[in-house]
Image (cartoon, rainbow, N blue to C red; front, side):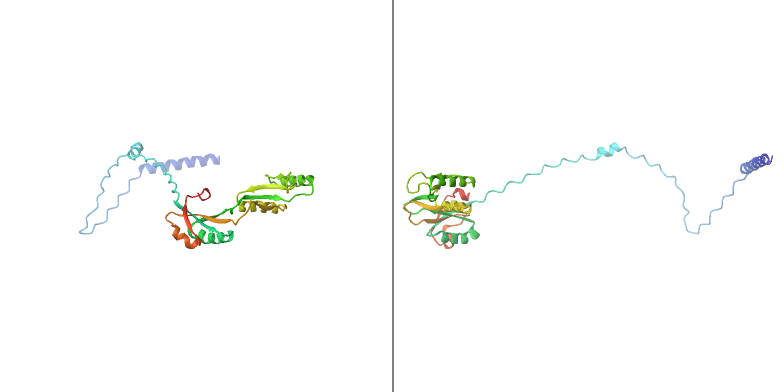
Length: 235
């Protein structure tokens, strides 16, 4: 019973508030403040409606297309520097040629020593001395082959029978290089001149910048210097 009375009371109160809201009078507008003399009153002007933004397509069309990137240019290979080649010599010994090479290399470019066999020597050969028997010579040849060397042969006749030939060379330098390789592997090879050996001569093949003269190289070499075509080793 009490709950029903509260519901009726709330309904009556709501109806009263609604009736008051509908019958209330509008509040009087507050008067504008007096404007001081000499000051112009501001008036509200109706704002114009701005036109809508242009379509996105038009903006896109106005933008110029980007130009394709130009292909990167490939730099041209630098031209090979021109060179002048000379022959300096002869030197009586390899040591003298090496000294001259030490003066020339850091100054003008590159120098390579070259040997010419002396008069009467047609070349050089490398060999092992004769063994006590054929079987021993064959066993030694097998050891040489197993060590990775080639160009060897067991000698079958003459004063060096049962010796082992290990190659022929035009210059002593090449023969001595072969001898050193065999000695490092434990084989006591020897170098022999072929024919009557006279004193060898040594030369320097020199490659210098273009414009270099033989006269400019002469003080460094200490021997006569002559122009020549560039050999294959200096190309």
